[in-house]
Amino acid sequence: MQLAEGLSRWYTHTARPRLSADKLTPISEVAYSTPVRRKIVGHCFACLLLVLFTPVLAFSQSATVAANSVAVAKNTVAPIVCLVHDAATGTEMIRFEIIGTAFMTDRTGTFITAAHVISALLASPSKDVCFPAITFPVGGWKRDPGTDVRWFTFNSGACQVNTNFDVAVYRTIDEMNSKYPEIRFDVATISNERPLDGTTIFFTGFPLQATDPITSIGAIAGYSAGDSYSTVLIDKNAWPGASGSPIYLSDGKTVIGMVTRTGTGDSAGLSFGIAGERIASVLADAKTNWEKAQNKVNEQSPVPTSQH
View 1 (cartoon, rainbow, N blue to C red):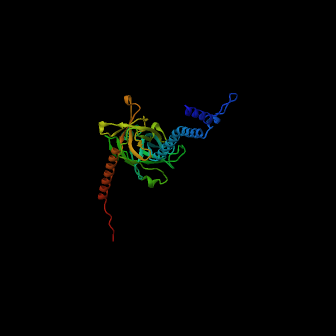
View 2: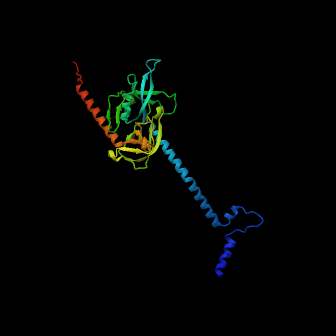
View 3: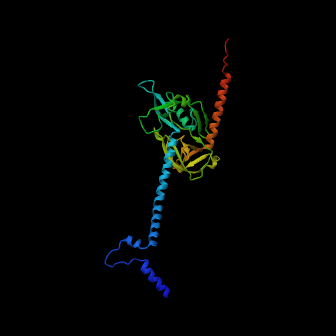
């Protein structure tokens, strides 16, 4: 009993400040009346700041990573366009229509798109006056309508197409890095990886006749078991014209798939793509066939002889 009374008196004189009945006591005087309480309040305040600002800092860092990834990916994509002669000059080429999206796989001019994009190009009413091409702005994509653009035509009939996977591999007629060395672009790395469901992904392309790349951010929703998991399901809708857009990871260069179609009806809100493994196999077949064709040409060409 005496111990309890002693503790009570100690707490009264040391732990609590004496409050005046006829004046208001500042909260700081109450809170910091003892060294112990000052430490407790200080620690609580620090914890509160940590709780409040950690999500903000995490979001800021995430946004920075996303922006950097998009900036890298934008340099790998190009619109597939229909070029026509300018009626005023008769010689200058102008961009008449954007058909879809392509992404680069090397610096000589090899690119990949969806097979149905090329089918749409070949079925276009303007196909007889249209020169199929991809275009790149000088200095990269800067959202400047006055940016000078370079175009690279390709032969729509000379390619490697796999209609089962909806993948087409093409090469520009002229080597890009030698024709216009001032063009800045990067090449994508195609991965066989199948990221886990819920993994954040991006896809960048030229939907809705956009003259600059448009990026969508989504997540892997799953894979279709009906085709040996070749189809990637994306929890994000894709607009018309996005077909051929690379689906890439946070580094902006690792492509794990390509957008082929958007969901309708019961699948509205989803997009569908072909897995990187299938794209890589079609690309490998294309390179093999091109090499064989070149070897055949070399064999048929006469060997020059020196004259004495």
